[in-house]
Image (tube, rainbow, N blue to C red; front, side, top):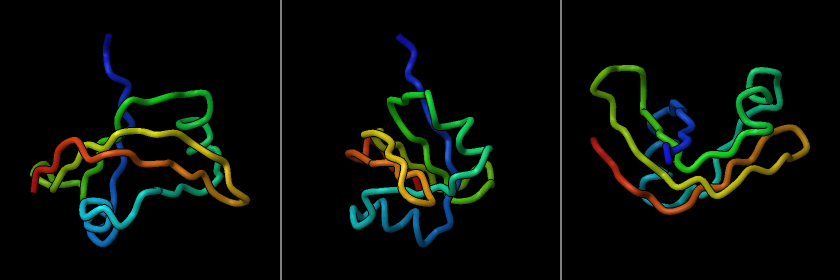
Length: 85
């Protein structure tokens, strides 16, 4: 079965906080773009990149679920599967 993967790009500050285990949730504004990408979809993993460069640091993290907050989507992060810097 093919893994369902959510691709997200992060600033270095947030990337590093997730990598060291201090940040266990990722947030996205409730806007049509994110609603279309997140609502009704389920993922196995999240691929985070720190920037858009071909060789940018990369991290695979387990997807734990999605909640809808007052003004943002809350993506629950699981264990870190892989980090490439």
